[in-house]
Amino acid sequence: MCMMWQDLVFLAGSVLSIVFLAPTVRDVTAKIPLGSSVPSMTIGAIYAVTYATMGMRFSALGSLGVATMWSLIVCYRSPGPRDGPANVVRFGRSLARQARGVVTGTPTDDGRAASGQSAD
Image 1 (cartoon, rainbow, N blue to C red):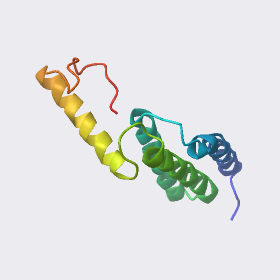
Image 2 (image 1 turned 120 degrees about the horizontal axis):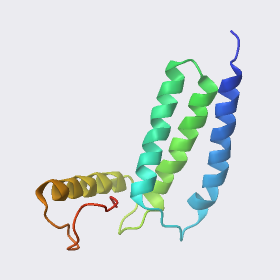
Image 3 (image 1 turned 180 degrees about the horizontal axis):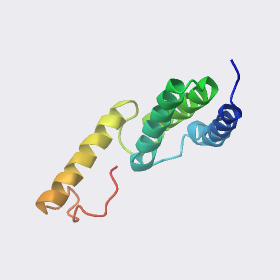
């Protein structure tokens, strides 16, 4: 089987992403909003599955590594009272609450209008 050169290019990009995300994972003072980190984690996982179904194993492994780094950021570097996977649930609830506020025209918990806010 012949390896596609694109597989190595995507792997290289993923490795660079992992290298650039490592300082954020190590920095205990870093606070990355869930509105940025949860979508990035999700996209990395989707890319990993997509690459795997295309037979691009190296790209899939690289994207899985990126998704893992983002999941660590979600769990341990988000602003909020708790650490861990529960942050994904907290993000989902916040997003649903804001969507409900936009549809109904009611303010969010902090009294501001729901439109234009990021979920976090």
